[in-house]
Amino acid sequence: MNACKVGRYVMLDLPGEDEKASMAAAKEMAEFVLHNPLIETYELERL
Amino acid sequence: VSKAGVLRFPGTNCDRDVFEALETKGRNPEWIWHADQFDSKKYDALFLPGGFSYGDYLRSGALAARAPAMKSVREAADRGVPVLGICNGFQILCEAGLLPGALVRNRGLRFIDDWVSLKLANSNSAFAKKSARGAQARLPIAHADGRFVVEDDALKKLQDNGQIWWQYEANPNGAAADIAGVMNEKKNVAALMPHPERAMFDWMGGTDGEGFFE
View 1 (cartoon, helix red, strand yellow):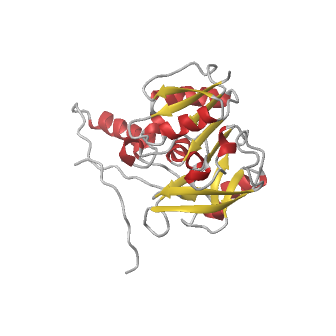
View 2 (cartoon, one colour; view 1 turned 30 degrees about the vertical axis):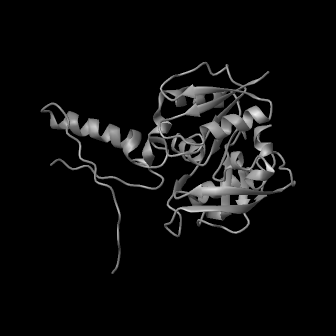
């Protein structure tokens, strides 16, 4: 095994149709509380 | 008599112990509810007790760090009011950015409930300049997320600025530089993983915690 990564999966259901606004809101939440930049990284993905 | 504020978040469980430790030392403690902001000039010292605020969901201390009361804690800290975090309180202060670093899962991945020997690295904090036995203390620990981590350059800064407060004699959790407690740059915000409120009387197993509440 070359690597093993343990992570957290957070699924957000956001109101509104505007993808750009929703991604901005998700980014804001990720930056505010959902990740701690000292010990975690994050990626956002639209489902 | 000076007033000491004791913060309570959902899931805090060492609050009563800290409150009584302060009463024992003749302080005048008062509860502060997590959802309420308060006048930052009202208290001479603030205490963030241990526990499992918000069930440790997301990350230990992460949600408590963003509670309304913490806005007032930040204001008080900026004004130089002494703030002491214990265990979960340490995790909250790191998550709030009032202290450097973060506390992650113990190296051995298990919850540790034990007594540890500590050495005082710097005596310039607002709390426990000296314990009953001088530069040594024996205190209980009870944590799963007690491994202090910090970036290399930030660790060097902690060492250069004398911000390392207490160190473990025998590192129980893999903490960087054996760190059990740190301070902010101004030295008025300090926190440690061990529980001084659980070492107030001989019947508790030791009295080295007394100095933290004087």
